[in-house]
Image 1 (cartoon, rainbow, N blue to C red):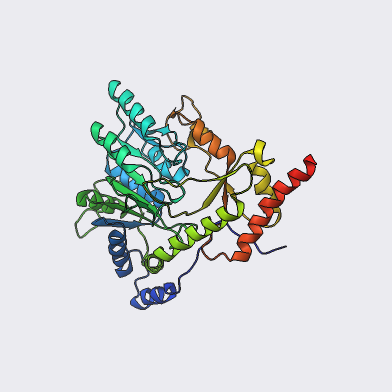
Image 2: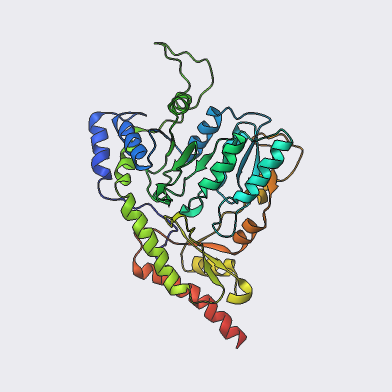
Length: 395
């Protein structure tokens, strides 16, 4: 069996062990510590926000953001349907209901026109959402100027899910710019990783400090342990922060390498009939976290799943585009209350056909920044073989 080729494995930069050793030497092994402080400061500077909070996952960061905004039972939150569930599950944690907004075909991100129509309808019905959560899909920023403008018109805050987009830019500003707050992830498959972890950033100090309190079990500022509200154990450990801080220093080179990988795939596969690539929006630069192709079966001669299975047979991991949230079993329409563990969580959707087509046809190719040309050529050869096999069958 050939060596396993993963979709987006961790890639260490070289200084992680030194910073972890510093953390061990300082005896700050428990959550919080100097590395957490340094990571928050460096990250805030990287994304051009004054305040940052390091936590143990991107999902935790989103949960804290929604809780700090006062999202609760009976509320609605508008969110991208083409996303990972960690972007929207915190809506359910708070007892609120998601409303899923479709993507546009030009960027694959939340469609600003559909969002505007949904907000106008909600305003007429006196049921405006408590927040809007657009996802920066596969490292490409959503059109935050247009999204932000319509949300400001109705007084609805935007929480950018930039978990996949660190290092990307929107009109020369870092991913997440223009939102009230933004969420990032350092999961093992992200462009930089601390093995796990996330970050919440904002220009609103009170918002971040409230989230910080909640992330530390909401302990009141008295000598003994006293709690006036329920919080969470969402803190990032000093060891994890040391890894993240070291990885942050590699960000620019990681983005450059991701874009090189995309360009290599595009040159090698772009001539195949029925093969397309995720477009890059004219307003920014994607970090190309994952290279994503689309497969039109009637033209290519085989479908997305045929390619995926062919790759898997050669021990190569690939993955379909995110299955839209409005298609997920947990969000099937039912009368069940919006609680975790219910058989179905009632959720409305606006549009849906774009994200459904992208799910049906989209495939993420191995895009790890440590990939060699030989490894990329393995992937390319298999994709071309699938097409070549179809031509032979026709002959």
